[in-house]
Amino acid sequence: MSDHQTPQVTYAFAKDKGVVILPGEAGARVGVRAGADPLSLLEVRRVLGTPIQLAPLTASEFERQLSDIYGARELDGGEAEAALDADLESLVDSIPQTADLLDGNDDAPVIRLINGLIYEAVKRRASDIHIDPFEDKLSIRYRIDGALTEVLTPSRKLAGPLVSRIKVMARLDIAEKRMPQDGRISLTLGGRGVDVRVATLPTRYGERVALRLLDTRNALISLEELGMDGDTERRYNEVLSQPNGVILVTGPVGSGKTTTLYASLSRLNSGSVNIMTLEDPVEYGLDGVSQTQMDHKVGLTFAATLRSILRNDPNIVMVGEIRDGETADVALEFALTGRLALSTIHTNSSAGAITRLRDMGIENFLLASTLRAVLAQRLVRKLCKTCKQVRPADAGEVALLGLPEGTEIEVGHPVGCMACGNTGFEGRLGVYELLVMDGRIKQMIHAGASEEEIEAHAFAEHDMLFENGRRLVLAGLTSVEEVLRVCRLEARKNGGV
Image: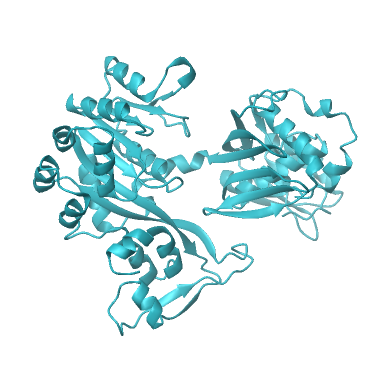
């Protein structure tokens, strides 16, 4: 947060001229970006009324200072509540297709509240903002590292103006309150691109709104940054290098499947291959990749689009999700033509994807001949480096981890501090298991082998989800409870619970 007593030039001036007044007691230090307009320093000198000291900043340092100084907004509904007697039509103004939250001097309280909510969410690494009206309050929560945290509970009278304003920004029908609506807002925050997916839903006490924040920088994560263990990463890269077949990524909602697929496409995007994606919706833009958004209202479904995509001569296709037998059948038949297909499917384990596809009506011979690998994944919260406590594990924790009785190990525990918002965790880590098809597994699928039989062969020499999660616990990166929370089923298989 900046010092609010420090005089400041406007955001538009600072961004355009490349100068920013740095907060501090003296208030006389001025950050200067390379190539800044020298004449602008005269205006800064006039605003401060004192001699100034120059501090050279790189482009990234300058943008960070812009966000910190101009982006701070008070998360307090008092001002907005006091303004409710004003004409709400003043909120329904024209919003540009891409607006910078920090630009302009619009002091409408509800607008300032929305700007503050989104800015604070990005700052705290939240993936979602939930706005829920209840009988006596409006609950505003952030989803941070997979867990919901309540940040604001203003009066329910704020629900109407707040939802209306968000609808205007997302180009939704503000008069329609009986039907769910979906929209999108493209914003920049101090030069940083943020896409916001908006979903409204009628409830007993009014419309609830869910905002999904998509930071465009997350699309640039590489496979190396996903945190796979060495064995899984090596084998997954080998699978990606194959010219044809189907690669599936599986896991529950919010387990990072799309991030893994985007990282895989970035690895494959050499410029010499034609990569096309079918998504619902398109979450991030990828340079050099043709991305198509599904529209079920006009019949643009995964299966229908995949059938016609062959005429566009793709080498690699990413299908957002296999939801039904028709999509699965088309994707597998697509792979038979010598192309590589990547997609996601919802199952609890990698071997469970084979059972799921069978339940969708896929024949065993088609599965055996086209499926190349299934990557199952989860996300566990990472212990805060500032406050975590490491101490010897007790007998119960040793048993929960499936280790021999009497094993002496040290494990980390969450505590909570200012740095992590008193949660004890900061950031998340991926936990993976990779089932790679070999000759024996193909024979087992042909013979109709069960999920357990396939699993026993596939992971005889490789780690499953729980074992990889246990490795993170032993490395002091996460807690025993966190691994058991996301890998409880697998822990039972391994004798842990």
